[in-house]
Length: 425
Ligand SMILES: Cc1cc2nc3c(=O)[nH]c(=O)nc-3n(C[C@H](O)[C@H](O)[C@H](O)COP(=O)(O)OP(=O)(O)OC[C@H]3O[C@@H](n4cnc5c(N)ncnc54)[C@H](O)[C@@H]3O)c2cc1C
Image (cartoon, rainbow, N blue to C red; front, side):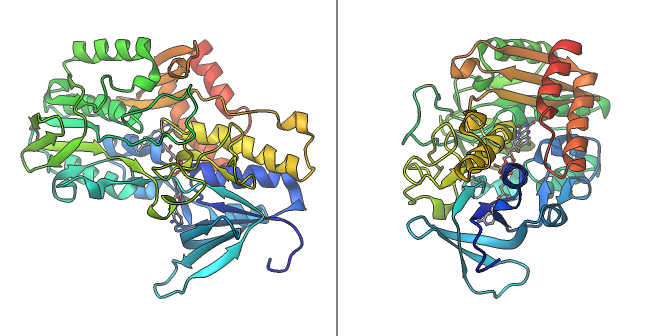
């Protein structure tokens, strides 16, 4: 690849946002570009299905790691398994250290176009007591740890708390229509609470009344819009769930419970928490980033000051809440923008801009799931909530399609899911 005259597109990160973007860029640009993708691991983690696997007593490490090297090589793209250490936006250069074996030196790679898809750092290390007393379901290691606790005799029947730490969203370059979120992504606590309640009943441990849902915000999952959240809270209250809001942040976890920044605390045997989504340390002072380290972009996901740099997925400042479906929308936009720049696509075919909508399918236990489609939080009027077995089947089907297409869901994938969820089931 060195010495090639083709422009090099460098994609940093190869989970949902990065893999899909790299694959769409290849589709749109054909052989007109060299594509190099860097990620510290050579597989994608299918994060949204971790709760399903854990409650069904399946190890998510076995079922939710999708190898990516052969997919990228099949596209004629290069993959480097490495840790990204620095981005030099003035000299169009990225520093990395390969991670196959320890001891590798820092190397540099130049780019013509850069796509930042590095996600975020899930800051469990900032929650005092998490290592000893915390549980979570945001990655397969922790998922498996909780699966063992539940299914191999760890749980003793005590109270359970489920909720999020405070998210710190940047303000630099934030458009007026984008609200400030106090939690990064609250679909997961909702789905974990619903699944956990069903699991307790099914295993004769009581039920939802053992569970308290908490949020740092005035209302949980406020990005789903008031109408949907009210329906959820009413349903959860009727089922016996407890709920506390305005906790401000998690102060610490102890053996016996959880303490919040607002001075309150709850007794709990099980502390299931989602942390702050923080940008990677080396992103913090970059001129492309806001004060929290998320990449500022316009609605074509392009840096206003560095037009050959794009950001997609959780790493982008516009991605709030931190939802994979938003990264999927952005991936298509970025591929079209680069194809347009390179003369592979007429300008009118690359006119799509980012128009966020919350689309989320969450597990509810007992082979049921909920589906939320809402843009009310961003000023729109769409507010749809559905629940049932067919939604659960669609959630599983989406994962199958994602695997079969190697992270390149067909253009009708998300629209078809919307159509079936909203008009058929
Ligand atoms: C329990 C749970 C359930 C969820 N359910 C849903 C859902 O139903 N629907 C939905 O839309 N979203 C859901 N989400 C959110 C979704 O998982 C994220 O929005 C999505 O994973 C973001 O994708 P991404 O590619 O931007 O970032 P990530 O998935 O975080 O990927 C970033 C990639 O960058 C790599 N990387 C990071 N730093 C470096 C570095 N320095 N060097 C090299 N590589 C690096 C990582 O290895 C990783 O592969 C859920 C999240 C959780 C925790």
